[in-house]
Every structure is written in structure tokens, then in C-alpha cells.
Amino acid sequence: MQTAPRPAAPAKKLATRQRLLDAAVSSLIERGAAATTTLEVQRRSGASRGALLHHFPTHAALLSATIEELVRRNDQAVREAELTMADVLNPVERAIRILSAMSLQPAFLAELELWAASRTDCDLQAAIRGAEREARTERERVVESLFSAVQENPNYEAVKSLSVEFLRGMALSSVLVSNREYHEKLITQWVWAVRVLLEAPPFKAGN
Image (cartoon, rainbow, N blue to C red):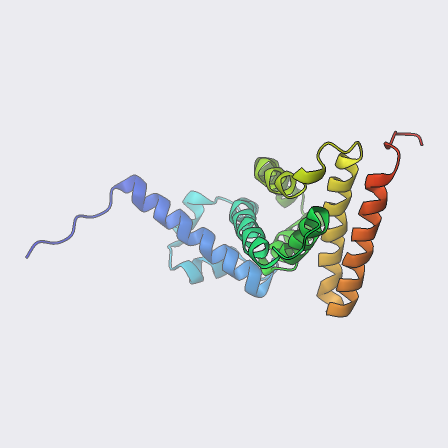
């Protein structure tokens, strides 16, 4: 009886790395950053201590490596939200509501939690900054695609950046204030504010 060939070494290493990352992401989402220790990730993944340290020599390296997977999941949440909001006719309102739905997903909240955890951890902060720089292109591609209908508006950049910051803040507040009516009110108010911005004279620094 022939046995199946063993996977080539590079493929096996990649599979182990992905298993470690999947374990880290699931721990982040389920238990939070503080509980996502290297021992917890090792336990969840079933990998050896040596394998974990080979791929991620430090705790900061492990946590920062999860950013790419979290961004991928956030992108998937955007695509899923797009399918449910085809009846929202105004393209700007649709963009805001899609991003709002994504920002309340566990993967987005886990990413924000990593940011907060890095406030007092210099190594983690440096690692996350590097990971976020690499993820920025994909994140901006998604946001620009959603707001493409107003790209020619002189206040487009303000609308785009302020919307992202508003939704990050709303996501954080949702951790303590889980009130759908309140969040709906905030979104409605922000949609109104964006319409005002789009009709306003071009923003100039120093105004």
C-alpha cells in the first residue's frame, strides 16, 4: 500500500505559519489581545514551541502578523454588506452604511483592540505600525471604491478621512453602548453631515 507523499518543506512551513495565524486571530476575536499569549496560540494551533518561535520570534511579531488576516476579513465583511444594501440609492449613504456594518464586525474590533494594546507597548506599537503600512493600500482601495461617486468633489478627501475616523470611534463606543437605535441615529446624522460637506465651499487649511 502506497503512502501519500509528504508535503514539500516550504509548503509545510507555510501551512504551519497559517495555522499559527488562524489560531492567533481566533484568540483575538474570542478572548481579546491580553489573552492572546504565545502559549495560547501554541495550544490552539497544536504547533510546537520551536515552530512558533521560528515563524514569530516575539509576541509583538505574532500579533502584528494578524493585521493582514484581519484586514482580509474586514474586506470580506464589506463585500457581504454591499450585497444587503443595494436598495440604498444614495451612493454616499450606501458607502457609509457599508463601512458602518463592517466596523461592528469582530475582526474590525479586534484590530482596534490591537491598536489600543500598543499604546503602552513600544515593541508592539512599532510592529503594528509596520503591518498597518503594508495593509494601507488594500484598505484605501476598498474605501475609495465605496466613495467613488464623489471622487471629483473638492471636499472628497475630507469626507473620506472623516468618515473613516467617525466609524472607528463609533465601533469603539459600541463596546460599551450596544444600542442599535443610538447607532442608527449617529449614522443618519453623519450622512446628513457628509451631504453638507459635499455642498460646502472647498476646504482650505486655515479657514
